[in-house]
Length: 98
Image 1 (cartoon, rainbow, N blue to C red):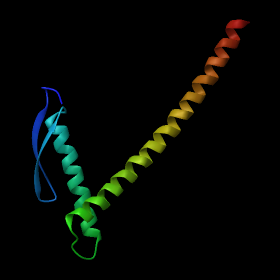
Image 2 (image 1 turned 30 degrees about the horizontal axis):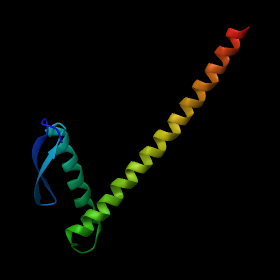
Image 3 (image 1 turned 60 degrees about the vertical axis):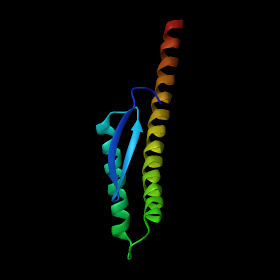
Image 4 (image 1 turned 90 degrees about the horizontal axis):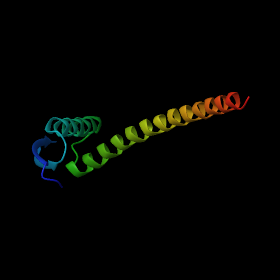
């Protein structure tokens, strides 16, 4: 990591961590808060208290699902835009050749 790394203390699911990252401290805290929120949501949905590792894995699965859904949507939009741009390029090239 670079000399611009930040050390940020965050709390996730009751555990404090010191994170070293080249990102803005507020950004790191926002990520930690999101993970903490997801873990707490998972535990709230379960009938009995679970070990933190299990809750973390289930939260990671949920976060990954969100990520892949957004990625699929992004890819679909990207492909649509690329198709439209290609069509426009063809039209422009045809008009230039006239």
